Length: 143
Image 1 (cartoon, rainbow, N blue to C red):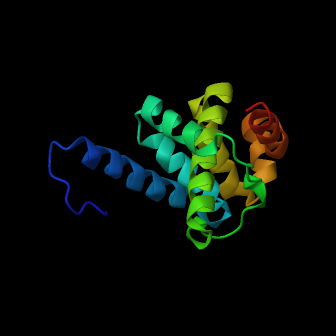
Image 2: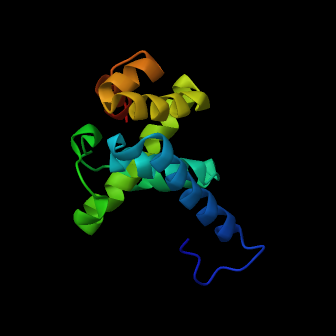
């Protein structure tokens, strides 16, 4: 776990541990079928401090042309720095929206369905009873 410079009792340590633990759980539940944007979005969402994270993410997306998250393939680190920041922010906002709209449990159902089907669209229909692309387009279109 990347905790260089963090000590016990440090709020950042707890945040980093929750983030990295979420990646581990996602790997177990969603496996390779979990796209990186969803993996990172869930990990950031699992950190806690939603007011801080939401404010950061909304600041990142403000006035920018948004990405189609469902079309992103591969690591977000291959994107230009500004595009990567946008992708991370959108990833968090997408997961936060899904959890708020469909409930926290829906995220776990999504991961289990991803493991079972290996298909994000099928998994999202099971978890949310909706097409993920439509849900995200509606959410981000309203921003």
